Image (cartoon, rainbow, N blue to C red; front, side, top):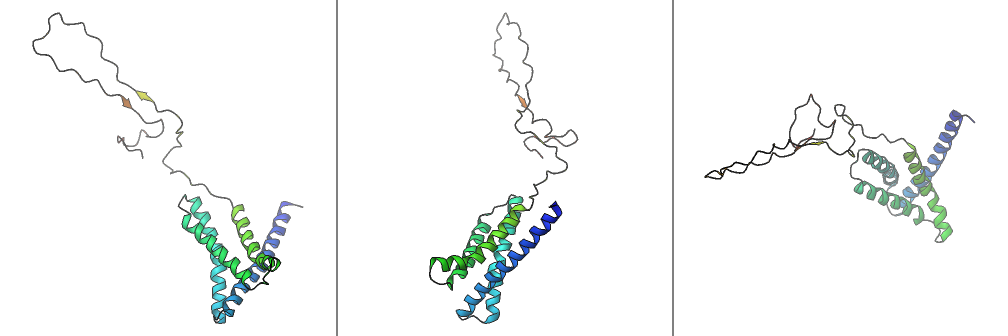
Amino acid sequence: MTERTETAVRLVILLAIGTMAGAAAFTHVHDLSVTHGQPDWIGWANAVAVELMAIYLGLELRARRRARRPIGLVASLLVAFALLSLAAQVAEAEPSVWGWTVAAVPSLAFLALVKVVLSNAPAIPPTPEPDQPPVDWDEAPEQTTADPEPERPADPVPPAVPAPAAAPAPAVILPPRGVVQSNRPHVVGIIR
């Protein structure tokens, strides 16, 4: 089987499972809403909101991870909507382990399908700014120090007033190579 054929077969299977599991999950949420007093159109609105929200939150979670943004709220909402969908599946099931298991299959299949599709898509790593060269932060920064003053011979006669002690020259610490470019202004303490 060629790669192109395999991809086409996977897509057909993905669409079949997604369509059937999605239809069953939508129907369970709709029926539960209508059974508990909601008009028919609100039942479908609830089904769309619950099921599509889980898909949207999965996409949003992936986008936030890629952008290195916080994901706590989105992940919590994703779990909440997945549990809501699952609860709607088992609410009208026969009250037995097998009844609940069989009723949960469409929701679990739909959520598993979304997870597999989202985890297979390639993540795009953030790109560095174009004007910044890559920097190896593991390298130790080069340090240069001022040459020590040459020793002077001792004065034969001490001066009447002691001269103030000369302060030693501070060590100059330079950033690692490549951090500050020669064509950019040098500002102490700020690395652009």
